[in-house]
Length: 475
Image (cartoon, rainbow, N blue to C red; front, top):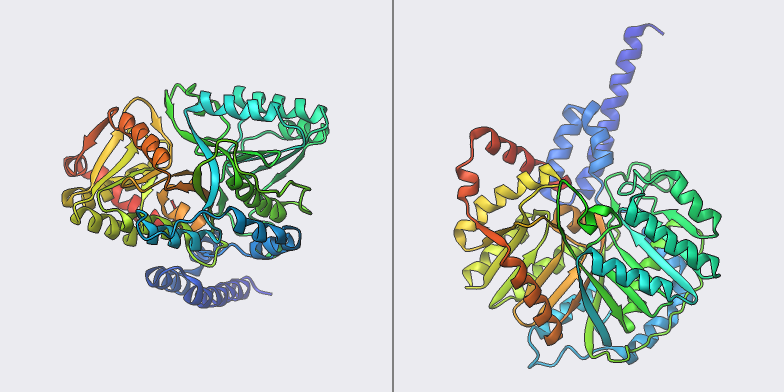
């Protein structure tokens, strides 16, 4: 076939593929603006737009729902047992009662009673508690992180897991293959050689999902024997221990849990494991109240396989429920229009709306995009603070004296729609007071920033901010 005919046929195929992809985007894009942008670009310039769409334009994680169903028969008793541990959060005189009911519907599970949650501030406290729990394991350990590095703390984790595997304890390790892309095969091979089951989350698993490169499993979970669980912002890396010369001290928060909420955290891990690996591990699904447990806790897993945008709706509900105080701590602040408007309305209601962000960037585009929202929101009553001593990575929300949450979700589109996340929320007065006191200490180490931090910058910086904002749906 002549070269010019080969070129014409290739171009025709590109445009046909662009048209077909545009039709798909028309029915599946997350917003009308996104639908228009993808349709126009794929029709007019499919050579670049089509590959970008199939990597960045997917709005749903395909197949994960079937993985959930695969374990349903083994976990059917869990739903029945939950009724006996359900917390009564519907009392009309309870602060934020209507809000708590909405959160239960988002989670697809109730607040459970009889829990104990302890704040772990910083890497030292977090990994000391995790390693102590792993060392005390008798039956199994579940480990899931977005990032695992082969550095000092990564090798320390490996040593503890290898020691327990040598004692006959079953170990299951799940990691995100994008977040842990630098993890050498030798690290994983050593774990597997000891009988530890290790799997990547595999967002590209299956022929129809091979382009799902933009989704991430961002959860950080450790469960020991179904009795103790850990959830929070810390990954496994020396930077999380404050050993990075670039970032210095690393400010992060984790939770140590006991009680029925542990079983629901374990369920989140099991759903991810069932997607990534063949079969569901034999786990202890009994619901146990903590020895001194008095806290009501909600476990809210969220992700792109959910029928609703659960994480985004959680932020919206928390913002709308605030009457006096709304403090949000997130290292990555790139909210969508709905969350931005909700923050503005909260400030207009007279709510003390504070956003705590890092001073030092680790992802430059996300850092730049945050300046746009500073310009847009600060002048109307939303107060912004930048943490000074080192890098801020915790993900925490406080609503009045009525609710506090700690988890893995940031206030950005990636957490709202692209990442698998997990959040722990509680209306317990002592827990809310402890989280509030922790953040008051953090705010004392921040500097207040205003819109002038953007408006006083030179033109090139503002241009970079505007460009970063255009990329906010995929940051």
